[in-house]
Every structure is written in structure tokens, then in C-alpha cells.
Length: 419
Ligand SMILES: [Zn+2]
Image 1 (cartoon, protein in one colour):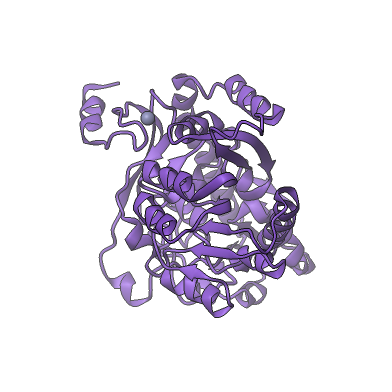
Image 2 (tube, protein in one colour):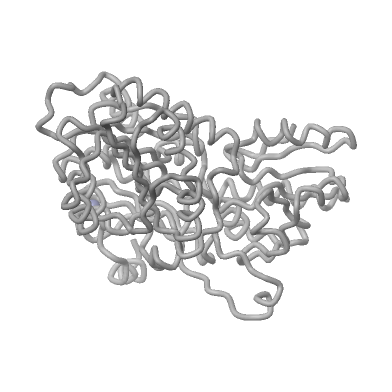
């Protein structure tokens, strides 16, 4: 570490779980705008906020993290993302509800609480089975969609204090679930303590999050953004849960978001459910991948730089050959990728997205325009760069007609792949 770098440590916030000083850089993606701050045409004529996007790993507890530069209130006020828009994700939610209802024997006397319940895309499947639910969702416009659909939802930020208020109302959940929310929680200790508070004795918690091991193994640096404060291994998660009296007793490996873990946890005292072999296996896999050693994290930055060079080489060679390249999708991950790689409209003319909120707007930082999907058919590009690469199969099947004009598909992650 140079003297200047060690001075930079002084300005970095301490670990949000254990409070230790953060010394180890996993990757520094430079300055980037908030990935969901799509711009209107008028906003292109003004200044734009860029913030450091620098992931550090805690030497003490192994939590990979980005400093909180932006408050959750700013992120969630009018969140542009509605989870109901992905077909594969909806199927995933439906299967989860069926499996958990059966596995836990949930019925009319049970309660399922979802943290960050979005527009009710998941809880609706429990409602359909006659299981009482309560959603907690901080984004008011998104929560309203759930409420209108008859899914009980509170517009709140979940944490220690709100959990106590719920418990005082008599709320005790047989199942507490949180999908892709843990990463977005700035005060991790408050959030996990809150789970312990609302979890009934004998109850189950399931939490899904993108697996840090997959992120690192498969170059998924574009899943890093300011709104994702933390990046979890099982090793770190077990430690965090244990600090709040929860034991991880089972884990599922999922395909979602490029490879996720779903951890199942229970009260520490609820020893009737022993820790499964799956937990030992995933933990052993993380140790074999070196996730318990700082040098593994320190190597990741060079891997990301090499990936950036390969993406730029493809785009530059395509343009030099007179090919047209347009994007598909405008996900947060696309914005991290395009900003970090320095891609502008000279390399990617425009992108298209199914979410009407984004139409006529521009990607933050890169100012690449977002059009409705029909714009793709009108342009007949040579290459369609699929930015939500985790949905590559679903999207290329939907866009099969691109083949009619000789168009080909490209994903940037884990490696440039053209087909
Ligand atoms: Zn720590």
C-alpha cells in the first residue's frame, strides 16, 4: 500500500458489521453516477453527481462492502424498478411460495412477512394459498401497487426499531423472507436484529443474495453499485447472523442474478433442526476458492481490468468494421458496466427496455438513450448487446426474430460471448 492509499483509508467508513477499519481493496471502479438515476432530456443540460464506487473487504469479518454515499431514502423514494417485469423471476417466486408452504406446513393460522416486498410479486402466491402475509416496502409508489392488489403492505424501512413496533402489535412470523434486500441495507446489524425480533419461536428466515464467490469467479463486477452496500459470502453471512442469535441451518444454490444463495436460518435455541450437509459443502467451497484470505480479494481488481479491455476491444472492432451495435435492457448492472468501461453513444448507439418509465430517458453518466423495444426492430442492428446477461436465454428467445436480418447476440459477462 502506498502512503497516499493509506491516507485514503482514513476517509473510508469503518466496516458496517464489525466496525473494523477497512484496508483491503477488492476493486475500485472509479467514479460512477447512481445506477438508477435515469436522466430526462432537460437533465442532460446540467451537472451530474458521480461518486466513488470502491469495494473494500473487512480483514476481520470478510464482509465486502461499498461505503454508504447515498441514503436509502434517496434510493427508494421513487424506485424505477418493478420486479414483476421479468418472467423468469416471477416463476422463481411462484415456485418458492409453493415449496415453502409445503415444507413449513403454512396455513390460515401462519404469517409470512416479506422485507422489501416490492409490488407484491411474491406474497401474492401465499395469498392465493390462503396464507396471511405482511409486506414491508420502503418505496411508496411500488408498495401502492401491492396494496391496490389486496396484499397487506406497510411503507416502512425495516430495522430494529420498526421490528419492535411490529412485535408490540403481536406480529410474530412463521416465515420471514428477504430477497435481494440484504445488500441494500446500510445498517446491517439493525436489520438482522429486527429479523430476530419478529421471528416466531420455531420460525424460519430465508434470505436470498447474489453469491460473492460467483461474482468473483465470473467477473460480475457490474453487479456492484452504490445501492448495493454489501456483498456476501456464506462465511460472512453466518458470522453476521450468529451475532444476532440466528443459525444458518440450510442453504440452496440458485441460478438467479448470476448465482445466488438462499440461506435458511432459525433461532439459535431451535436446535431441533440441525445444520445440513449443504451448509458444510458451500462453506468448504468458499474456503477452497480462498474467500477466507485477503490475497484472493486483492487479485480481483486485475481480473476486472482485463474484462474491461476485452469488452472495449469487441465494441471498437465492431465499429471499425462498420457494424451497428445496440443494447437490450437498461438494468443497474448495465450502467455500472458502461460507465466503468467508458462506453458512450459512439460505441453503443442506444438501448431498449420494456419498462415504460425508462423510455425517452438517458442512462446516467453515459447518456445513452433508452427507447421502447420496437426501436430495435427499426434499427436492425448487427449486434444486440444484452446488458442483463443473467437473463440471456429468456431475452434471446424473445428476440429470436433478430436472426432474420442476420443480427447476433452478445453478452459482456463473464466473458464477451457472441452467438
Ligand atoms: Zn468487519
